Picture 1 (cartoon, rainbow, N blue to C red):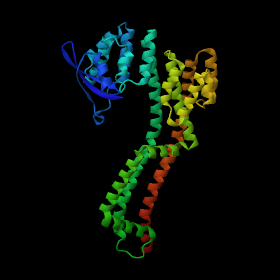
Picture 2: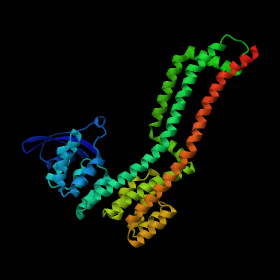
Picture 3: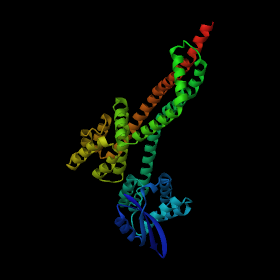
Picture 4: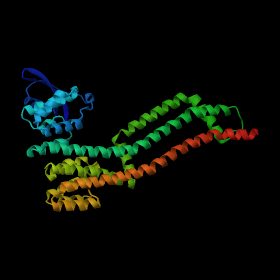
Length: 390
């Protein structure tokens, strides 16, 4: 989808509207329902920036207003009137424009797919037939909180090791670039130096003579590594190496399945058809599991049970398989999907805790050991020199 800026004449006033469309003709057709089209232009890719629209806050406030008895249009009007952020107000005014023309909220949200995720749009669309919009929004908000909490646990487990590695690298770089050359000046005029002292003298002379060339080479090397890491091929290769580790791959599977079942359960609770829910949920699966999803869809469309199709496609764990069978027999498949997601969340939280307790001290020992070795090599020639003098 491309983004277009449209300028419309409506009720004698010129209005600006952001439109998501496949091409200019599609954008013009959408705008024609809103008013007289004056001008449409595509927003260049480089001009797009990440939206600062606070989706979570918008959903919370909308739920509160709807629970208080306000109609949908009145609730969004109230949010637009109180908004002091021009970008927030623009998004809300865009929603109101579509609602004034009789469009449902889901279609209004679909025009700003850069802000409103497909899962929210699908949940709202399914609730519009049953009149349970507040419940659908509340379920989506709970889903977002759970997913955000899971992501924070993963990132917090990775943040400390990354900080340790970064600080250790800076310290090692300082020792190699500044400290070693200063120590080397002590031994530069001496004879019969040991291997460590000779290495320090050689490194100091190299920095003195070729320092600028080494700096340029290091900058070029770092730039080349960064550019290589941004390519899809290198990324895929690195992730393949990471996931080849059995323990890490097991936790990755738990994370993927937790998101999959929580999303699938949310859509089923909203009243979406099983096949449509699987298609939308399948977008969360990594590329290497898309073939498994297609197998599940084929089996379900042929009339097989959802539990059996997911088990055959290896999109379950042993516990999840049993819960799916129970949920399918009892007619509470959506509730069982939420239980499966909670079970996987707890298993992943335990794994993250073990990782933090074991890996972080080991990493500290490795980084500290490297720094200690360099410091020892710096002082060893001095100790030998003092011994020879005595």
